[in-house]
Image 1 (cartoon, helix red, strand yellow):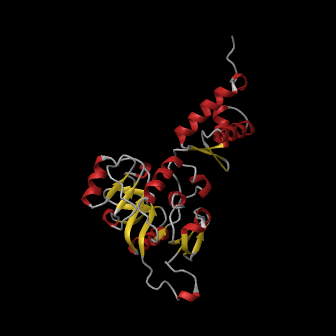
Image 2 (cartoon, one colour):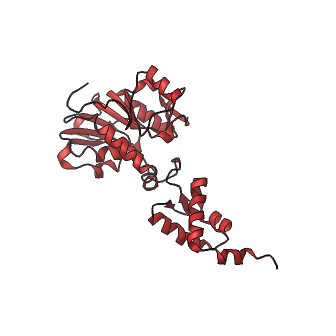
Image 3 (spheres, one colour):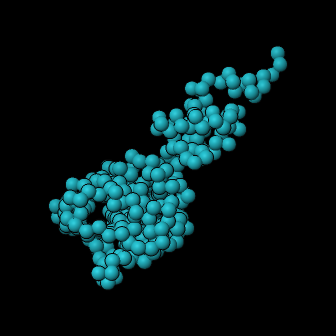
Length: 283
C-alpha cells in the first residue's frame, strides 16, 4: 500500500482532534502565527483562522492579529493592552483584590499604566473620596464617580500599546501650576520582573524612570507582580527590592526571592499569606 500524502492525512484528521492538537501546540509555543500553524498542520490559513476564532471564543487561547498566544504566555511589550488584559487574568484579579485592601477612604493614590493596576481600580469601587493620579489612559473608564474626589492624568508622550503616557510626573492643569510637590499615601506599581539581585524591572527605559519617580512620591509603595514575573530580569531597572513596602502577588515567591524580600523588609501579600493589612487604619 502506497504511503498516504500529507493532503490526504490532513483531510482525514478530525477537526476536533486538530483543534486539540492546535491548542496544545499554541500552549507549548507561547505565541504562533497563522502561517506557521497552517504549515505545521498541513491545512489552509483560512481553516486555521476559523479554528483559532473558535478556540478564542472557548477561552482556550487568545487570538491576535496574524496568530494567537497562550493565555499563560509571558507578556511582551509589543502585545497590545487588549491582549495583555487576557493573559493571566485570574492572577491579576487576585492581585487587584488584595491590593485594594491597602487602600482606605480618602487616600491619595498613584497607579501606573498596566493591566494589573486596572484590576486594582475595579476593586476600589466601594471606596470613597479617593484622589487618583495615573499615567493610564484606560484607568478612568474603570472608576465610578462615587469613589473619586479628584482624578488626574499625567501628561507626556503616549505609548499606544500600553495606552499610557510616559514622561515627567506633571499634571497638565495650568491652575495648579505644575506638580506642586505631589505626594500620595500609596503608590501601586505593576512591574515586569522581580529578581533577588536586580530588584524590580521593566522592558522600557522611559517607563522605568517614570515608575521609579512614582515610587519616590509615595508614603507607602506596593509593587504588583504575578508569579510569572519571579526570577526574571528585564532591560530597565525600576528600583531595588527594598524600595517597596509590599509585594502583592498571586502565589508565594520561590525560596530565594522570598528570603531576599524578607531581608529587604518587603511584606508579601498573596492568597495564602497569614495576614492581610486591615482597611480601617493607617499604617
